[in-house]
Length: 311
Image (cartoon, rainbow, N blue to C red; front, side):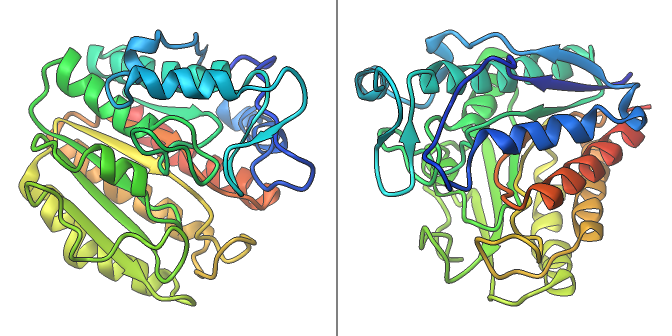
């Protein structure tokens, strides 16, 4: 089987103000990287926008109504100091959900060995009724709920190595006993959540804070000592990755010191987990990463690692 790459339609328009780090050039950089000959073996699909019922797995209808009402007729509108929408933002976000749910369906059906979704805006900060941190809809949590409720899985792991804590995913899965959520992240750092004592209603959440300046050795040690043994005991039937690359030392928004080799390492270790417990079934969703050259290189390395496991 091959690795499935799912992108949003190229005419998707989610615009942000000039100078905003989360902008359409991020997707241009990712697409350019994955158009290289090394990725010719990828199976490629363009996502259709998800039916709103998929978003309703995690968000109430009144929240979608508020997002729709906030869309400007032109230009951009600020939902908060960091999070903006433009006329096409909700359609673009729903295409991101469509990519995530299609990836779950394809991997669980055996159509692909694993999948990567090159999507924006990111999703792991969006709470049930609160957009924040550039995010509108909780892509990873929605994907997990799709696997649990539509496909009937009993155990889904969501892992997040973005430099910022996935507060939205944590909140959306807080009371979900069938899921495990693991996040490594810089702390202190926005959004201020992600302390080890935040364990969820059923002791299903594991937060791994890293101090500013921490590098690959500390990152790998935390995952090896705490996260991976817990996930081994859980024995997931599907692994969903919130793949944020802003913990790289070149990223402008934080102060961790990870290198390309650390993202390759964690991808491999999560694939090891999936190989051991769920026939290699991994769905990866793009989250952060705001230095364009670094983002492109990290995505390329991540997808190469996925491709090696799906051959």
